[in-house]
Length: 201
Image (tube, rainbow, N blue to C red; front, side, top):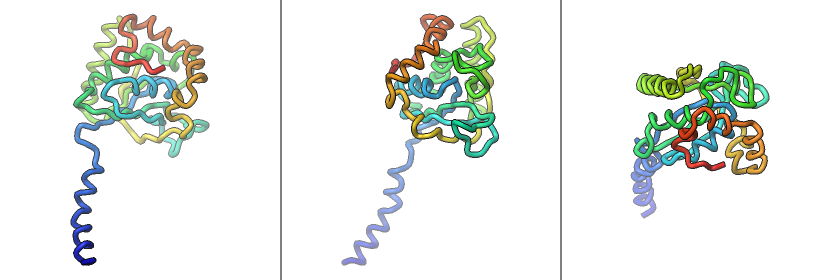
């Protein structure tokens, strides 16, 4: 009897492994838009987004940290269900949640680590990103300086940075208001500011 149960348990292993696989509609995208606390908060407010992780990408240093990240940017990795929200829709929302005309950082955060970028995984994403950038530039009537770059290694930020807006809502709110992020986005984009986001901050 024990042998029969053992054989049956082995037969079930491949099927149990399949249940842990990500669904085909689950995709990821990487964006840089200044402080990753704010980017995480914004994208977690987009219907169809499954989760957002703050991290570092775009540089050459191995194992970057908040204190020592070399030429990496602060980025977010967005996991989404593309049956509920498309990559093109995420791009539309991305442009309207940053100041893509600023090449020196974002809002009160200055320096290379806080500059904007769209990281693409393949040629399809590149075409969509370039078309979306052109559309956003026409809408603004200003030059967009945000580069579209090939995606590279992504390193998770430290645990205390993840979901910072939930863990420290008062500090986060004070920082976001004091940095002038929303005021600048609203001045730049008008009624389209934060389009696609159910505000969580």
